[in-house]
Length: 87
Image (cartoon, rainbow, N blue to C red):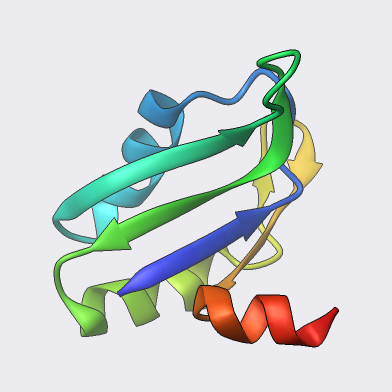
């Protein structure tokens, strides 16, 4: 399951994402999205979890939770084509 996380501070790293999501199950990958030119975080990222049930539980428990002083949004990531068609 691919999970979208928004509202991250610019200090959050991929290791931080792994740390908060590994309590819910096996992490396949974690990625903080960065600006191409500056390399600075854009404030969102993705976590892939091996098990859908674990991913759903993480979403339910972490959505609107406080992390690093901010309230984060956590939900199922939409496929890239669906995001592109929205604009």
